[in-house]
Amino acid sequence: MRAAGWRFGWRRPDLAAALGAATAGHLVLAYGLPREQFFALAVVWLSLFALYLFLIKNIAALSITQWLAVAMLFRLFYAASVPALSDDFNRFLWDGHVWHNGINPYALRPVEVAQRGMAVQAPLPELLHAMNSPEYYSVYPPLLQGVFRVAAAGGGDVFGGVLVLRLFLLVAEAGTLLMLPGLLRRLGRQPAEAMWYGLNPLVITELTGNLHMEGIMIFFLVLGMRLLLSGPLPAAAASWAAAASAKLLPLMFLLFLPRRLGRRFIPFAAVTLALFGLMFVPFADRSAWDHLSQSLQLYFRSFEFNGSIYRLLRWIGEHVYGYNPIQVLGPVLGTVAAGSIIFLAIREQRPTLERLPMMMLASLSIYFFLSPVVHPWYLSTLVLLSPLTGLRFPVVWSALAVASYAAYRKVPYEEVSWLLAVEYGVVFAFLLYEAVRVRRSPSAA
Image (cartoon, rainbow, N blue to C red; front, side, top):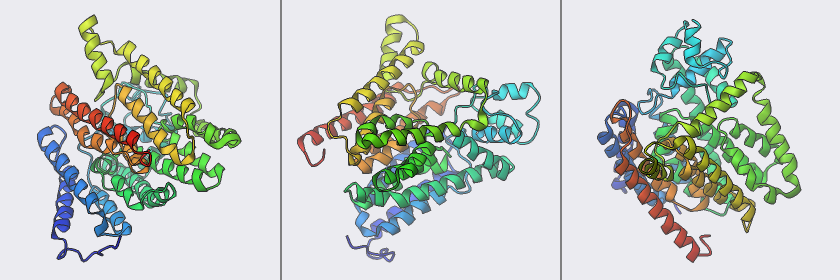
């Protein structure tokens, strides 16, 4: 592929127009649209995805270096924005400020901090008022707590904290984008496929824009995969531990490594789990562990948002029993997901490191399809795995995830069942199409 260089405006006015329209769309999402305006949000979101597919189709017009610059430029458009589609950043900064003030962020719920008269220093009252879950203990792993504390100490007020959080994510995303082409090349894929992740509107909006910390986990996960393929094993284990210390999901992927690493798996797992445990040492408190465990149980027993199979089974349960069976259904589906992923790991036929991304995609998809909660930003990891495997259903899912934002039209929020049915109907149909295509094409498998 020969790049046309930056001087393509007069040669490719369509590409220049698409880049300009995408710029306008990202600026609108960054500075002009609250999540309550669902119709306008959906129009801008889906338009950005149409432009994204056009850019991917014309990927040969620029070099991979130039596309990486475009991907980072889109992220920089959000640099001075305060997230409008999510208020989770208030909890991030709250945890950072209470730890900075000597309080274990796992030990007390925000309402308890307030009741004890400890939430008096600015900006704690402001954060408490804007928070969406002050009655729950923190669930964010220790590496993120360190990021939150740096943001609290270095940012000062809320806006300053937002800027520091975004700086962390911009650095992480830059690192991911720089590593992805090399990882793709090592897996026998085209480096330009990195733009399926780099230009994806959900990834840009939800990570850099809305400050969701999957971006930090993804950076360490990509680094860990690259080191597994070509680097020293202890460094790969350290990266895996860091990824799990940002989000717990990478621990799931350890199930697919024993048959790939053989005898090397024991030292790899030992280093990973030891470093992961060391991350919790600053929070070594029995009550804090109990509180973290309670919060994780609440996730499966009480919370629901944008579920698919769970939502269908809940509808059946309500018609049969007359009430929402989430207290039973959530843990049962979690157990089914765990059993299915273990079964995948045991029965996998060709456990090579090159096929690891495919098994990561399969296991994470099972987990999300059975989960009661699938926030749009959760899908960013699936989008990462799309270019590494050649499967595109995560991209389709990322486009249709905007349907979940219809819930915020009202207060309290209320999901729109028919929109969720459309979202998952299309996703499952496309997944079935890709499954049939893979079965008919040995090279695609």
